[in-house]
Image (tube, rainbow, N blue to C red):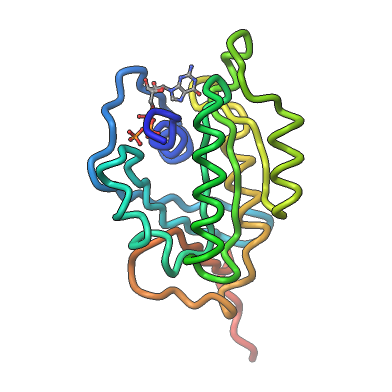
Length: 182
Ligand SMILES: Nc1nc2c(ncn2[C@@H]2O[C@H](COP(=O)(O)OP(=O)(O)OP(=O)(O)O)[C@@H](O)[C@H]2O)c(=O)[nH]1
């Protein structure tokens, strides 16, 4: 849904910053970030889609061919959790068969006005074999952990060759060049 904090999560991950006055996304925006994980470099190619209803029809362009999808709800708005379930159904029907799904319950800094119980969301995520974390883009809680868990679940490059552009893909390469054999 619009306003749940998708762009803020991506900004926190990519730029380690937070803008309380961030504008709603128009269409989609694209960002990349490379992180070191164990002895590999993981490059994330991230499409941040717009949540406003008028952009809904664009979403398949971005999730088609993607290795992973993060579906975000706002823990202070029950209706965003219902919307999330619809996105899960859509991904299951029209997304890539092996797409890694992660559910992020964002704005966990606002627990005083929580509407979605963490246990309920976790049980739902487990039932669909999705990654689950509560995040706060504002306070930088569980953002890196979310992406690291995604990269851990995505099979290595050979099984997922990069394929031209759209979607959330991850490329792996050794962090140190292999020495050629003598
Ligand atoms: N308290 C709190 N506010 C947040 C958090 N993440 C985002 N926000 C605020 O929520 C509002 C919406 O954030 P966005 O990142 O634009 O939400 P979005 O899901 O990308 O919205 P669309 O681009 O319309 O789809 C902004 O005012 C953010 O500052 C968070 O973790 N905690």
